[in-house]
Length: 116
Image 1 (cartoon, rainbow, N blue to C red):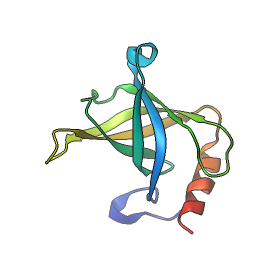
Image 2: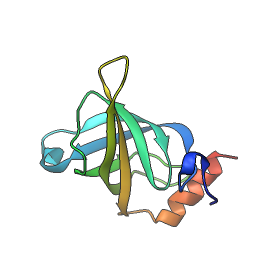
Image 3: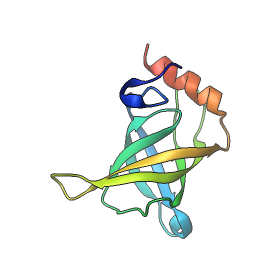
Image 4: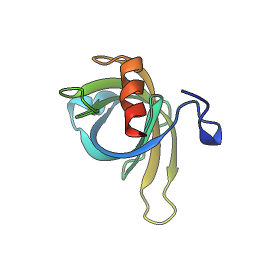
């Protein structure tokens, strides 16, 4: 993939993919169901009512990506967060750091297909 707009390393494509975010020890206690607004091979951005700590480890389970059957598990970290200017919620950016049952190349190939 070439250099993306706004200095991003990966192109971004708008999508509505159900995801489940669990942060640190809260993984066993609760899972927050969210809709992904912005996903790339490098990470994703979403809106939430929770103020997740910067640099915290996260596990992202995405229920469906392209033609890949079943959910995929991606490890990440909270790279940035900012309060939403109008609704009191937060925009959060997760940077992907590891892939359990999908390769980064396969994820890139699936996301590339969304742009066609």
